[in-house]
Length: 140
Image 1 (cartoon, rainbow, N blue to C red):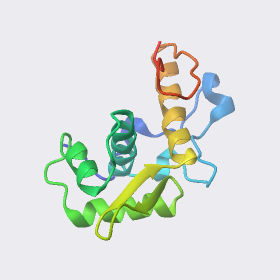
Image 2: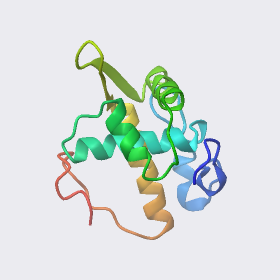
Image 3: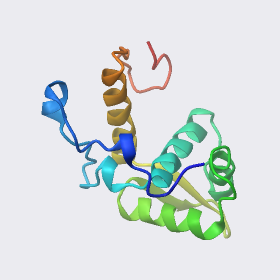
Image 4: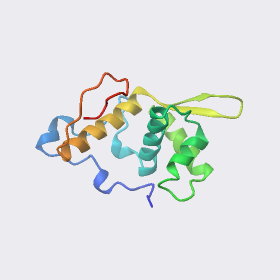
């Protein structure tokens, strides 16, 4: 499946003339797309998809989303990476109840995902429609 350290073609550290003004995808907190592991990137996407689907993004829901692409996501791997994303300012953690935390993307986390989508769309010569941020009609 996927490797935590998979960077390969996903590395944004190389640029060409079309992306010279946006050489690295950087959240306001200083974390770049290339600083994240593949698992962390997929965790951000899983949290975004849960929000899109109007589902609560607590640990087990995130784990179920990730298990579509990863064999056996264990507790230690998931929560260590979630804590790292919180420390990086990409995810916010809050208590749902005494035993369960909810994880949501911060503005920086969402911006990092959007920047990555825009770069991939540019690389594939795919247009992206401007949005009002509501999540409705986000794709061209």
